Image 1: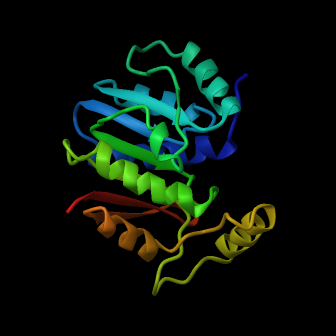
Image 2: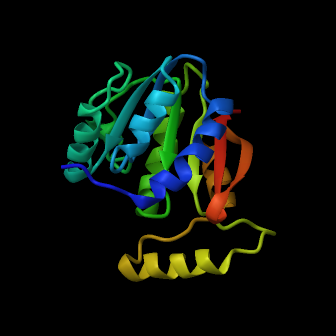
Image 3: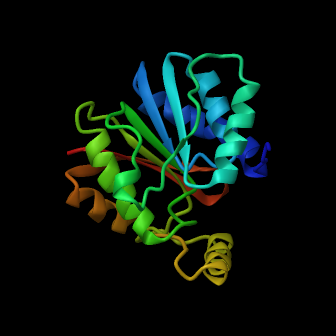
Amino acid sequence: MKQHAPATLRNREPIAEVLARELPASGTVLEVAAGTGEHAVFFAEQFPALHWQPTDPSPEALASIAAWRADYAGDNLAAPLLLDAAQPGSWPLAAADAMVCINMVHISPWEATLGLFAGAARVLAESNGPLVLYGPYIEAGVETAPSNLDFDASLKARNPLWGLREAEALDALASQHGMARTARYAMPANNIMLVYRGA
């Protein structure tokens, strides 16, 4: 049942360093597209005062998250819930104190990102908590690494609806939902983290 993403071991500590700066001291963190569940277990362990709620649209991913969770000794990692960000009616939580989304925006149709920001505006409205995104993005005025261009081409070959998104398009989308980018962090392997909060 357990799935393994090799990149998780490489990026989880740098991501956790940023999360330590951006996440609230306590409350519920909704992880969208939690994938294998390895990040969820690691971050729940790193932030024991936070209640970590992993979600994913894939039955296989939900099974993997549950399998990883079964070996977790703490009590702050919730059972995984089904969430397809592209479907407005599928959001399982009405409110959260933060949202984290790692490596989804480029490996999903644009509709999933539209739903992600619309959902964040609703779910984070009361707390004004952060929406934290991680992944490779295209940025105006910043040369895109050749490896990211190759990755973009391979994604589009697998599914023409996938591909690296422009950070400025996310900024515009956030603005439509009353949010604004408050931070950008350069990360290893030509990735970045973007943080959005209610404007």
